[in-house]
Length: 237
Image (cartoon, rainbow, N blue to C red; front, side, top):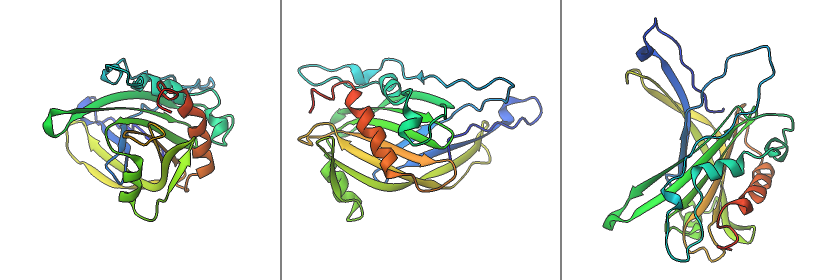
């Protein structure tokens, strides 16, 4: 299941529109939330979507010798590759939507933790990429996930690969008639920001429109191709 923005007009009032979206809710609270506009059918072949949103944000602001942090726009640019469909094993498909965003949360002591994310939806797969600049090592993530998600190494860095599930959420613009239901299986790869696993991670998630279990080989191909192109990857190696 891919994210979709399904607006059904009730008269002429926009407040009556209904919206359906898909969110990926991770076992550790790592999630993605995006609403993608639906495209109307035309007689001309569709053109690939371009990255939207993800303007320069706080994730780029830092001091000292810390490696650069990727903004939502940079994550989207890295993920929305011309060969993405081929890497996923679905050559010929084009992106239906693409976008990036960023945010932050304050924790105890007033410390602000930043993150950024991007999402690209194609015909068969939806793939998301998230950068979390926190102090949580990937080894801790693997331990919290339990024995079902053993640790591994990806591109020379600690990583963990685990199963998740999307959740479908529907609501109206006036706040009424909200509902949610289980979505489709997803596979999530979390890779440490540096080889020492000193904190922070890059997470890539993959799910299918038809609800089948995503191909781990496809997820790993995309990750191994995209992650080394991100700002600060070599510096933090």
